[in-house]
Image (cartoon, rainbow, N blue to C red; front, side, top):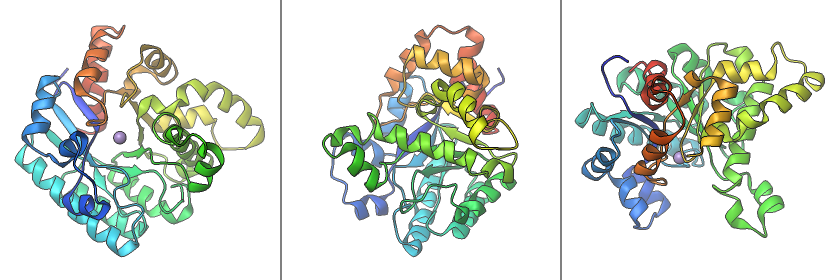
Length: 311
Ligand code: MN
């Protein structure tokens, strides 16, 4: 591998002061870490041997705000993150927050963040006022990401309220990370394919956490059955393998990793933690011990991310 950071983590969060205040977040050990863009964050990176965090605003960022507030606060969030990256350029990089309630402004903010602030792409926090990103109104964001040749990271958010009510009313703890996040994000990624987003933007690159939110396990079946029922220019699995990269955020499982590598190829898998919701050391220790060759482990720890993000 070339010089540069060897261990790169891509789904690592922070909270900008104005969004934190708006949401009325209470103090907690997790919130204290989300607030930190300096010593505490770097100490926990060092403790686990993580060279570089690609940092993003915590869910739901600005995606449920009115359009005017979203535009203003996304810009402020990106400016806060920019200052942190500027202070620690060897340790931090940024994924932009986008004011998706105003898609044209979101495309412009993506361009500002990439061209002026040096960010590596953007993170999409699931639904925007109940809408998935295959909705035609969001095409300007994909168009700009494709033109800039930067990836968009599709991150989980709680499912639509109607889904939460129908599926999880009796078991609200299932509606978030244990299951609901996965259903929401898996649905989001599959909708991008059947919604024709990749036919419109053939070089668009999408990152998904949690080892694809079960997509590798489902790929054969979805591809097999969808081919008969929904005609597309290419096979479903071909879209997935061409346009998607997966991270290990919050999914430290040898079995899930093996399935992901088998379906996607090792060059599509990238290390991440989902700090501070998961512990850096847990992610690092797991991947250090996973049954991989030295070469493949290095690709997952940082080689693949360095190439995709042009680090
Ligand atoms: Mn996350």
